[in-house]
Image 1 (cartoon, rainbow, N blue to C red):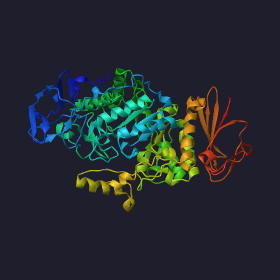
Image 2 (tube, rainbow, N blue to C red):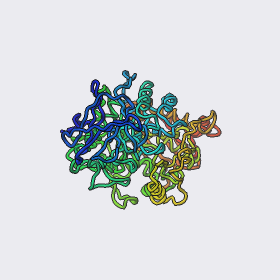
Image 3 (cartoon, helix red, strand yellow):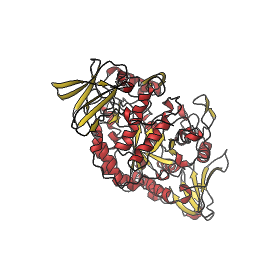
Length: 606
């Protein structure tokens, strides 16, 4: 049995009646002081008492929200609380008290959305609106709901250096970014989303911490001396003194799911989470998330971003898996990107043939044990038999756009007809759709990597690293410049009659169709074929069959008109019509033609 999250390991400041209790893990320190800061010139130091497992504790008279405090280790400099909920002045300066339980929730009637009905909208808080705050998202929630979105997925919001960052350089896992509106702003956003029926999923980083303002290692053995990641030291989940480290992150799960009413977590890069313990930390994360949600009468979904093509992520523990609910399907994106753009370098080296889209539709992965040109070894394992709803797939996300020299989106790489075809591949796929903010109307502003570090050496290294790691050379945008951040902000505009309005209408119609077409919602079987044959393919066919419906999705993969057979099937959808918006309507359906790059969906009764 897993030990899960134990309350006696709690490290967040806790309000108990008229007192505030502090606890911090510092097993190798001889003394720890709690320093309460009243003004710039007035502070008081209080010696903390040693407790079990290397924790130091102290209870003081109740401190109101906003009260500043810090820790002093062995008479050293002041350090913010590793479990701080609020960093009003950034990563380096003192923490502030925030009582997350004092927020007045109005979501008591919230009903969790079934996993099969989830449609994710990945957004970056800072660039989703001009204001770049949690509160500025709220006025746009109804537009997302009307589009057909059922869950917004926030890029990481844990406090990071400066006020511009993707979020993966966070160093305070419990503290919502101050420039976004802090913890109160995040709670207001989640409550507002629940009021109109939207789930909120948070992207969290449990594989490393960012480089600037990272004081965790001064407190205890949070980092592993055995493993490392591409972004810094790996976290210590299985070495000596790892129990409090595990508890720290399990408490973080409880914090977000229970205290902030989040509906789930997306775990960043789990392939860089290393754990040889009898019960893997990923299994415990799922167990704690379920317990935290149950404690407030709800449910939670845990999603893994894994590049391993390993269904152990979603197998139940009794079958040797980790028991997570879903995992990202990178094969789908890579197959679409490589085929549509003819890019075959780097991670796209294993893709580019239409056969890959056929295989992924039928078997979930393309790389399921075959040799990978990119990795120079066999990669993945079979995933046949798993429901599509166990995988999340899309044609764009922050990584795939931002890890390009200019941060170009698909709308800048493809023609309008090709863009519609790529979107159709995503929206009628068997997987849970993920839409990156602005994708639904063909946003043309880029989404490059950006940051606002203060350490000059780190800034230089980041600039060099972007050029070196991705082979961008001089073409890469400077991530430290504010202009790079500003250009990433959404236009949030789709004028009537424009291509942008057509894209958005098509996304709306297909998301609505996913809710109503029985065969795509609960297929008994899904099969694919290439027409006229594998060597001379012009059409890709995906077929769903259920007890009440057979659904055939046809994709014209060429820039030429293609003849097809409708066989008296009902035509449910066509992408190249004036509404979406081809310049003129398609020829009469009796001509049995598909326009260049057109998708058509047909239905028949079995």
